[in-house]
Image (cartoon, rainbow, N blue to C red):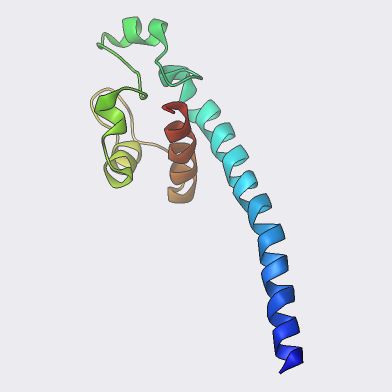
Length: 109
């Protein structure tokens, strides 16, 4: 019984120490994906690239306003995957789309 308890403690310790590194890697990956695939139009801060607003002739490219932040992840992932309006469909994998969205969500905070 002591051996099982010891294995459980070791497993919990290992999981606790490795999980933050995995989440940090996802966060870094999401930021890099966002910067490469999204920031050109939506801006590094998510408030929209004003030059692209003019070029595309749209009202706004902000993703930090209430119109975007109130949408569910599923709704936004659909827009990312399929495109909407003048936004083209993403060429990122589903996992990459999710990482980019997770980073985009942090910009609105």
